[in-house]
Image 1 (cartoon, protein in one colour):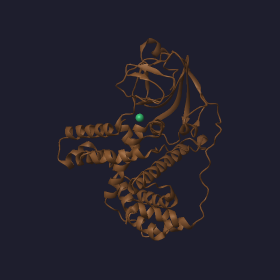
Image 2 (cartoon, protein in one colour; image 1 turned 30 degrees about the horizontal axis):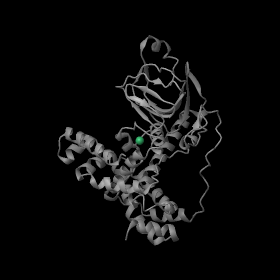
Image 3 (cartoon, rainbow over the protein chains, first blue to last red; image 1 turned 120 degrees about the horizontal axis):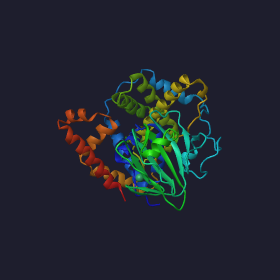
Image 4 (cartoon, chains in turn orange, brown; image 1 turned 90 degrees about the horizontal axis):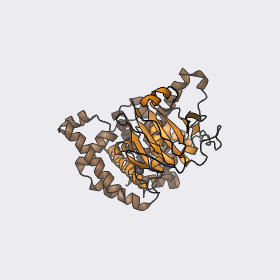
Length: 217
Length: 179
Ligand SMILES: [Zn+2]
């Protein structure tokens, strides 16, 4: 797989530092899992973070901290982590998903517009953003839109294109309030994307204004 | 004594003496690091303890060839901090919305694993090629989470220089690491 579009470096650095909201972290994580370039970048930030940890001014631990840890070590380990469920309670828009997504919980998929379906990912810790799968029929022209927040998109299958170029599996597209784009889905096959979105989507044009109350992404 | 060697001794024979040395060095630094990034002392104490407990439990997973001991311990503390924020968010949601109180466990920790050893050497080589100035601004901005204005004040440079230095440092790092 040749990946031509990567997340901006500051998002990769925030990912490495552990500062991203859960939905954004998921999209960057799924991209990085298939992208050696971004893996190296994240590893470099982690190395710098390790150096910062070495140089951090120590703050004394509680008097009983070491004893508390040793007691926990000697306690028989409780099997607290439940095995990830392999079967999804709801049918998926696509059964062939990357490993990291297969471990997620999904809500029911729903139709958002002609030729467009979405399936939310249940992320209890997500704060400002939400994540979902977006399925579009071949040749779909998405409505021209912009956002009040950010939109992180990772192509899983198929392709789309807009002013920024063509986006194929593994490619990452970043949109923020500045961007006003109208992606066109490739005509040969459906396009499946993983999307993390914060803020509201704003539709343009008379059709967009007409249907936007129904497009609840 | 190398930290990596001590972790190896914990992994190989549950060496408590080696573990005590790791605790004495890293626990107060993890706590100090977390406090510096805005966490309360109590919360930082708890995460620092859990971090060292995880070092003991996962010592066998540490690969000295891929990550330095400090970077590995940083990722453990980072993941624990993410987990604790997630658990808090879940509790808050459950309190607001009683019928959603059955909250599914999302087994999600998108850590990346570099599999090839030439990746590892490229990463170390790239970091060494950054200037001190460049690694300092990356550290202050992304890792220690200082606002740009504060970085400008500490380094005694204009705000615009901080922003461009960060941008250049990130671009250089990316250049060094891209295929
Ligand atoms: Zn990438």
